[in-house]
Each structure stands twice: as structure tokens, then as C-alpha cells.
Length: 83
Image 1 (cartoon, rainbow, N blue to C red):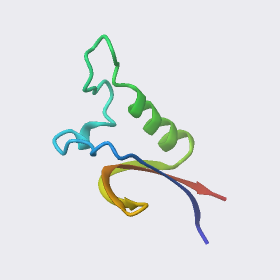
Image 2 (cartoon, helix red, strand yellow; image 1 turned 45 degrees about the horizontal axis):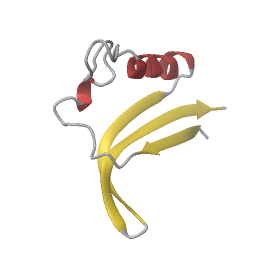
Image 3 (spheres, rainbow, N blue to C red; image 1 turned 180 degrees about the horizontal axis):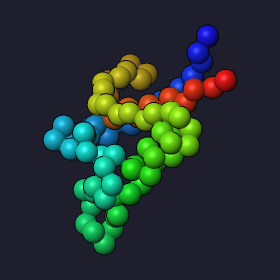
Image 4 (cartoon, helix red, strand yellow; image 1 turned 90 degrees about the vertical axis):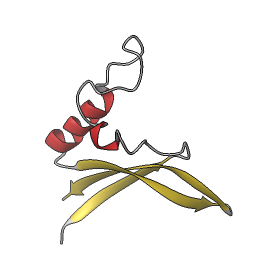
């Protein structure tokens, strides 16, 4: 039976704009001023997870409830196969 480690990270910051969500793992893609960001962090994270750990990282926007309140934000999922 195949087993995976699943790590989910949620935020409540309103999500990632739909016009850029498909690009956030691209090298050098950033929404910041060039002096503030290189756009390499999420790209390198994906490279390490995919190539070194044979896993995957994905993201999507979602709505979730917490303590009776509804929030919108991004969900990042990291899936790593374990033996």
C-alpha cells in the first residue's frame, strides 16, 4: 500500500489572485518590487520537493470555517511519498 505524508498550510489572507495563481511556482515570478523580492522562493521549494523528495506541492484558494467564522485564503499542500 502506497503511503504519503500530507502537509497542509492555510492562511486567511483572501487567497491568491486568480490571474497569477498558475504562475506562483515559476522562477523569478514575484509580485513585489525587484528590490524586495527575487521570485525564487516558491520555485526552489517546488524543485526541492519534486526532485529531492519525489513529492509535489500545490496551491488553491479555498473558504474554510474556524471557530464559527468563515475565512478565505490560500491552501498549500505538500505531498511526500513515504516507504
